[in-house]
Every structure is written in structure tokens, then in C-alpha cells.
Amino acid sequence: MGAKFLKVGYNFTSDLLEFITSSRSSNSDDDTINRIYEVYGSRAESSLLSARPKFRIPDISRNDFAYHVRKLSDAGVYFDYTLNTSDLGSKSDIKGRECEVKEYIRFLVDCGVDCITVALPIMAQWIRDISQSVKIEVSTIAHIDTVTQAKIWKDLFGVNKICGALHKNRDFPFLRSLSNYCNKNDVELVLMVNEFCGSGVKIEDTGYCSATSCILRDHCYQLHSLDYNIRDVLDGDYPMGFCISSRNDSSAWLKMNFIRPEDLGAYSTIGINHFKVTGRTGSTSLIKRISNAYLAESYTGNLLDLWKHLETIGKSDDIAFSPTHVILNPTLDGFIEAWTGKDGLICANEVCGVSCDYCDKFFAKHCL
Image 1 (cartoon, rainbow, N blue to C red):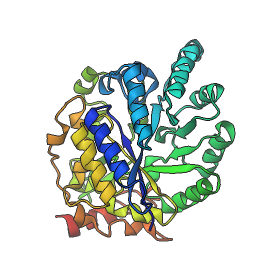
Image 2 (image 1 turned 60 degrees about the vertical axis):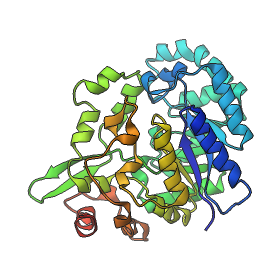
Image 3 (image 1 turned 60 degrees about the horizontal axis):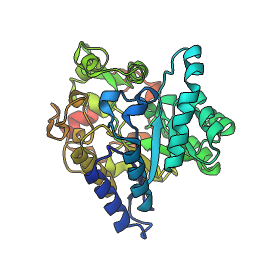
Image 4 (image 1 turned 180 degrees about the vertical axis):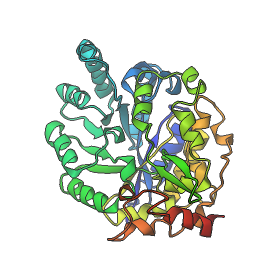
């Protein structure tokens, strides 16, 4: 089986730059070794154009940004800049900001960024007004739920990459179809591997937990796009406090749409070889730990150590954070097989914890 290609969140630190460039150069001539081929991120200046608020984005100068892009490029690593806001304001706001946004797009192109990620079609159009050569990736925020959506983005804006909708990560019939379209039309399909976003509730009469993709996810992105600040995070339970409290049952974590390092091969068999490691606002130590697990396709620790937990947002000690729940990753060997077969599970067609109790029973048998 061939190499897997990782896209890693970038925090603009010198030690992360060294880690990525050195790991890249050490195996650049071997097409069987997994590698970091691309990084993604953004600067504080463009926070209102991003799905991350200003307090979570590095505040570096334009010159420093250009330096990092150049050093990464010299090592054969691409830079994907995230202009993935889901809310540009009213129509008058959009019209008033067009010149400002296009100036920033020109700056990114001049710096040599390889790709720009967008969630809104209008942003893709502005990019194409500036450049026909810079690549465009459709963000997971855009929810590519059908193959036809992928075709429309390709036909209208010539997009080059699609980051899959998180809630589709275990829908293998859909992924096979989307992968087939993408591979035939020169579109790179990327899946997020370590995003544990979701929400659950306890079902009292069954003893199980019912979970799904987080019902607050879209609004959460909108709040971040509107410069959600650290006071908002700490004040009250909406939205992140709800998400945290809804996963008090350990088995709920199995129902999130993560992809284990050991399970990358299941996706390669259907033509998907590009994977996105989330956590660009985390510490370098955390990013390195997670990246190394996926490069090796192996991790023996707590599965939940492969995510930047919501409780650590705005804090510098994410690497020291200890999740309340412990799910040893090796206990999940074979877990994904319920979805990979021709007649495998499709979670969207079930009432989790009611019509399907697979995760609860697997957890009770293998993880306790």
C-alpha cells in the first residue's frame, strides 16, 4: 500500500518549522513513506476572514509570514491559507469588504501560498478574480454532502481540493463515490482524522448514549467567524460547554467521526490518501505528537490524546491536559470494520443508541 500524505496545522513557531522541514527532507525520495506534504493556517490580521477568532491565531507580521511560506516551500511543503469564514456579514458588508479582501488575496498569492481554503462561494469567486493558478480547497465547513456539490464547485470555480464533511467520515458508500469522482477529475479529497466534534445525550431507558455530529457545529463556526473571544468561551455553556458536558459517557467518544492512525489504510483502499491533522491552534508539542502518530499509523496511548480538547482553548498547557476519559487506542483494533463493508453501517440512517448499539457494545466488550 502506498504512502499517506498528511496536512498539518501550522502555528508559525521555529520548532514546528524545523520538525516539518526535517521530517520532509529525510524521506522526500521514498514514495512508500508517509509524509507531511502541506500545512495550513492563518494570521491574526485576517481573523474576520477565518473560522478561527483572533485570540487563537498567531499575530505575526506579513514579512514573517512570507519567510515561513518560503522556508516550507524550499523543503517541498505547500502552504494552504484558510480564508474559511462562514459569515461575511450582510450583502452591503460583503460589497464594502470586497476590495480589502482581494488585496489580501493578492498578498497571499505574491507570498507563494499554494492553496487557499474557503467555505463560501463568493470567496472562491474573489480568488479566481485575482488568480487562475492558485489552488482552492473547499472547507469542511461547506458540507460537501453529495457528489453533485463537488462537481458544481469544480465547474464554477475550478477547485482543486475538497476537505470532506466530518459527519461523512464513516459513510463508506458515499466516500467511495466521492473519491471516484475526485480521482477522475483531478480533485484532491482530504479527510480530517482527529476531529472529535460531536454531541451526545444519555438515554435513560437503555443505559446507552445517543450521539451525532454536533448540532451546534455550524453556529460555533459562525461565532468564531464573528471574532468569538476568550470571554465568550469562558462565559456560560453555549456552545462549547454544551459539547463538553454532552460527552460524559465514555462510549460517546467512539461515536465521533475520528479516524485512527491504524485505520488510514481502510480509506486508501477506496482511493483516499490525503488526511488532515487538526489542531493548528495547539502547542508545537501537541501538533508533533499527533502528527507522529499518523505518520507512523500507530498509537498506543489514550485515543483522546490525539485531539486539542475544548477545555484547553485559550490556554498554553494543552500538552499537559489529561482527558477525563481513557480509551486505549489499541483496544479499538477492528472497530472500523462495522462501516467498511459493502453493507456496512451508515450512521445517518440510524437512531444512535436506539436502533444501533454497536459502539456501546464494542466499548463494553473491548474498552472497559
